[in-house]
Length: 517
Image (cartoon, rainbow, N blue to C red):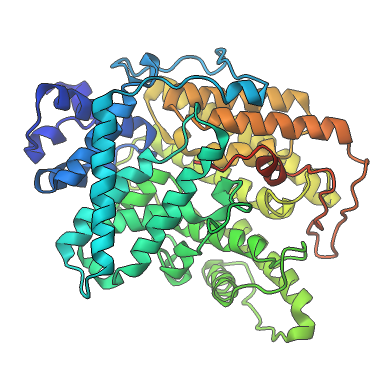
């Protein structure tokens, strides 16, 4: 097999011994190529999404059908995405993004073959049957867990919203994630742990997608709120979050797919949960979940332990009267945690170019997390001012983030390093702060269009519509019209969004529910 096929991981078809017809063979080859481009962030680390599934597909027809269904949908993607030529167009190339949200939602979808729809129906019906069987079974066998979560893992990837359906249906992916988490909650964690790499990967990816910061529009959807799965399931608890110096063991399958170090995901999950639970003085509630509080405190203690020049933490008791000071303290701790966070060690066998891409990416993610914290999440009006010091630092970070993103785009075009495919969230965090700067808006729009063209991130079209509407509202309202929010003494913006000038408000008004992945 040629070097090109090996580079895309097609040799796994021969190793797994999966028996396919000629047409099915072509579909699975397309699936492997596209998962390497769309669902693999850290290169030189294999293809964890499909490496285990290809072997399981021999034994479980439901997994085979689900993989073929996902591959079939990719046949309707643009030829520039699915073709064997892996070079990407220049990211400044024009991609027609309609400015009228009503017209954009009425565009006809690319036709999907009837055989693909039949496979989907078969896979979903089989999955529903297995879930119903679980409800009637006292003890779930390991084989059942493997087959169930193997199908779930593929359906997670297939469940992202397309660019052509009605906006109300864009919440389907959130419903899938919520249902998947309910199923995993029902299973014995020990059985999932022992069932192999694929079930564990499905659990971690579902927990990652449950994090509220990585989505827009979920607040207004009944029964689709976040479940704190990443923290509750202890995917990467604070006690083991420190990077191992000189480690040559590489990265976990979840890190290879998402690009985010698990230690940073734990911080973002805690940060997101604090904001969503009203853990900061923003009017969204009074109490912070005990699990979230304990996680933040332990993250802070662990950060201080591994930092050479930071004083050890001092325990501070809180009572009901001290609730506000507790919220301020959580905010301060999260800021310290992100400021002192260190990225994982990079295996020595990685190429210099990939190592540079990873360190660039992780620094972008860290800075985006700080900006997200200072803003108070996507629920806070972008017209609410930050403190002067944080405002200047935010602008500095945004420019550094954009420089890094341009570098990552070039690394994909020149060296096929694909980690730019997971940078939707940092781009949106930066875009959220650019309502008054037309130059930065154009730059961000070009970056998002470039991601859409290279990696077929379909929901970027909807994200662009949201950003255009947010920027329009900022122009109409201006920085001093009707905004009653202010700055809390802790430095956190106080929430007030009378003019609906937050990205979350825009998402709800336009009825979008989108992942930022």
